[in-house]
Length: 452
Image 1 (cartoon, rainbow, N blue to C red):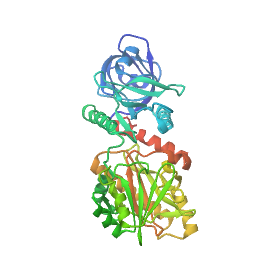
Image 2 (cartoon, rainbow, N blue to C red; image 1 turned 90 degrees about the horizontal axis):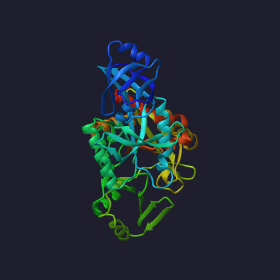
Image 3 (cartoon, rainbow, N blue to C red; image 1 turned 90 degrees about the vertical axis):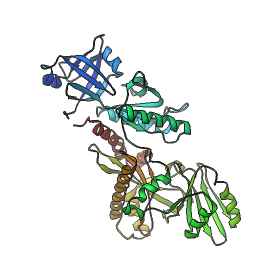
Image 4 (cartoon, rainbow, N blue to C red; image 1 turned 30 degrees about the vertical axis):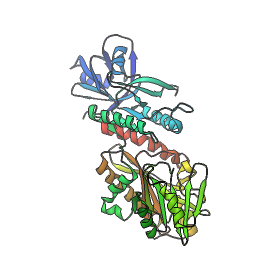
C-alpha cells in the first residue's frame, strides 16, 4: 500500500476532465504519466494530470460533478496508476421533522464532522432514502465552512456508521436493505453490526467459557412456568423487552413472603405495585405472554450509594487506528433513589468509574480487590466480550457494554449495545468524548486503506 497523505481539494471551472496534483505527488508520478485514474467511493474516471504548484489538489467542475464530491480536506494515496481520494464516511440516520435536525444526536454529528475535517475524512449524514443507486451517489448533509448544515451530492461511502437507535419495523427494513446493498455491491465497511436481540447476544456470550460465570441467568418469557421457575430460584428478577433500548420497558419483580412487588420505570416516574397474591401477579403477567418478546433475567445485587441510588457501569470499547480493540471510556451510572434503571435517558447520572469505586470503598468498605484491580478486571472482560461478539456477528469497530458490580466485587455482564451513545461523556470527561468520536474515524481510515 502506498503512503497516505492529506491535502485540500479545490474545484476549478472547466468542462474538461483535469486534475492538478499536489507537488509531492506530481514530482513522483508526473514525469511518467500524463493521465491518471481518480477513484472516489464507487466511481472511477480517467483525468488529465497537471501540476498544481502547491500542496493542494485541484479538479475541474466536470470531475467534481461526475464524482459527486465537493471541496474540503481529503486524504489520498496513489497506487497502480490510480489516485484514491477519501475515505468517504456516511452516518446513517433519519432526520427529525421538528427541532434539531437529528434530534439529540445533532451535536454529536456536528462534532464528528469537525473532527473529520482535521483528519482528512469526508463525513456526511444520510437517510436510507438518500441513496441514489442508479446514478451512484448519496444525498447527504454536512457542515459548510461556517458550520451550517448543507445538503450535497456525495459519493457512495467507503465506510458506514449506523446511528439509528430507535426505529420502526419499516425503518429497520429500509436500513437493512441499504446495508446489504452496500456490503454486497460496493464492499463498504461498517463500524457496527446488527448483533441481534438481547437473547441472541446472551447465546453468543455463552459460547465463551471465560464469560459464562459473568452472565446472569436469562430466559425468554413464553409461559407462566418460565416466570415461576426463575422466581423460585431468585428473589429478584428483571423483566425486559427482548429488543428494548435506553432502559425503557424494564420491570423489576421481587418475591415477598406473601406475594410480589412489581416496579416499572417510565420517563416520568417510577411506579410500584405490591401484588399480594400469586394469582394477582399471574393475571398481570398474562398480559405480556402474547405481546412484544420479553426476557426474564436474574437480579443482581447492585452497588448502592447516597441513600440507595443503584449503580451500574458502561464500558466503551472501540477499535483504534490499527484495528485493535481498546477501552476508551469507563463510566459509572447512578440512578435516582428508588429507580430500577440507571440509564441517562431515565434520569441517571454519569461519574468516572474508578472515582466511584474508590469513593464507595472509602464509605462502605472494601471489595475483594482494590478499585484499580476491579477496573482492570472489567477491562479484560470488556475486551473479551467484544472479541467474542465479533467472532459471531462479523467485524465491528465499537460496542458499549453494561456491567454490574456487587458489594463483594463480583462482576456481571448485563447488556451490549452496538451503537453506544456519548451523552455520558459530556459530563464525565470531554477529552474522552472527543477521543470516542475520533476513534471510529481512525478505524474508518484503517479499514479503508487510508492510513499513514
